[in-house]
Length: 493
Image 1 (cartoon, one colour):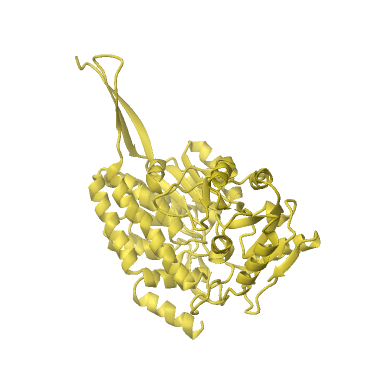
Image 2: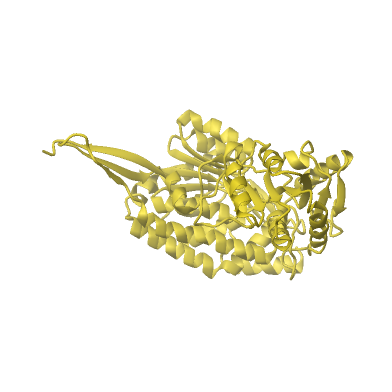
């Protein structure tokens, strides 16, 4: 490793947050067959450490551990569980610098952005600690004088949480926070590309006093782990963030034991810039939603639809801003964009851009690998894109902004909705009537109006169509981890 990588890794190791084993039943363990996988720094290609490459046997033991812990954890009062979660939140915030460094090391995002994710992710733990004390049932007026009708809300049981690499902490906390607050226990399967942040968070959960078995973490052979979670009748809920393709497989697999399922899947977010938009606001918002995390977010603007009257002016200003973005190792001061996660991600971006230019699109800036090498790619703006190109039809998941031209509001709405995805959309307009009308017409679970960063723990996050099922965050996200029980109490007269 380079001196910088070594020093960061050594510092994290001395703090006890660089864990390289899985967590099952409160114990740090290796894979039963001793197999490991390497975790790389995408900015340098260097190996940070090895972690266990686990499969079905380890997962089944983690499930058993979670199942055994459920009986006692679910019987605690909401106030008691809240205290554990609050302590966990406090520890995460106390170590936000170290967690941010760990995230930058294994995922590549700029350190400032990584530390921001720690605060954002911790917010779900804090919110859940508070909201867990406000899970209310109901009393229903009975049609019969000698009956009393009640509705109780109870934890669903053991939860299998499968999370992606692009937000190594937040994608975990917004599942585990509400699950634990409701009284569930969890088996977490983080991405094999970024397991270290998950393990560090799990270490802090132990320090917070959360009992053994309540939080378990396994990683390695994704299909084997997923199959074990799906097959077990002890797992009553699957929550997943990732690709639509994998989400469909999980949904199909969950049918065998009729598990409750939450899915936050792929997006194809339109960002609509109307003629009457405040150009400065639109530029700031579109840049934020497009290039955050090097374009590797499910809600980033995948298509920027610009009305013809402002198209050229916006395109030139947007291209200039993109060209001025500083690309580099996330630990370098002032860097705004880090590397893509791996070589496959770069090749996908390259193929999308090549396909578009072969069909007549024009690259204004970028359009190629960065001179830094590795998996760095230049911030790219492409004009002359149409709805038949891959850049408009599929998630590029990289720092490429395709600009499409439209004439009327109706055309913009039609273009925006012409996709199987329905996660997030963005509108920039100073006309409130237009903004409201278009918002209601968009087939998306989230709409940002004159704002490019919309995620928060206090609002429901989720999509429609093939972008998923259920919501995360807010009071609505708590319901995903609860079952309703109707009680009829007779002989009351």
